[in-house]
Length: 206
Image 1: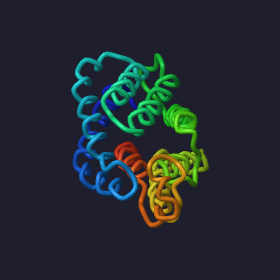
Image 2 (image 1 turned 30 degrees about the vertical axis):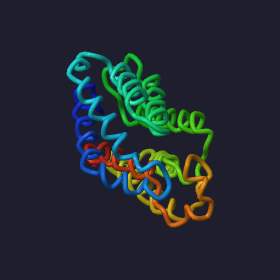
Image 3 (image 1 turned 135 degrees about the vertical axis):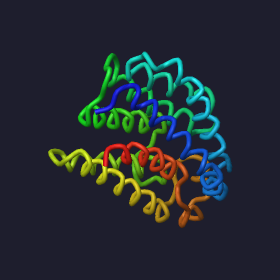
Image 4 (image 1 turned 30 degrees about the horizontal axis):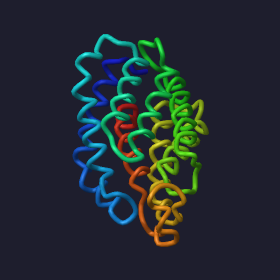
């Protein structure tokens, strides 16, 4: 169970983890992208944190919608629209709710996944953030009925495994797709940043 105050605290921690890993994410992006994934996300989440004080009395849906819109307007490249879409689709599920349950979160993550698929015209196996998002969702759904901590732990483990698997994929989306087989061996920055963000949520529930 998480209310707006809980989520605001988690969003601040998400900003912290992105700032801490900004250079690492940008290094991952150098061989296969625009060398700016970490820089762009760090700028976006800093902008999100600056808006949080004005959202303390809002419902979860309004909070997440504002996060999504902020990311779209401040994060460049492909990751801005994709992360923005993920948060805005989750916001629709959480609209009007003062707190969200684990069941709500699974519905929110499912909506986020579908939004990213549609926006990026992509699916799993194409060396994108979906290669961490989808395994996390499926692992959590498969643990239905287990304790909350077990469900979150399964999701995080699956996301981390998904990140590792991106090294064995040939990118077919974004700038990395221009490299063809040369994208093999490279860890996807988007899958990595999603897993970092997801780790903040999992830490609170495990």
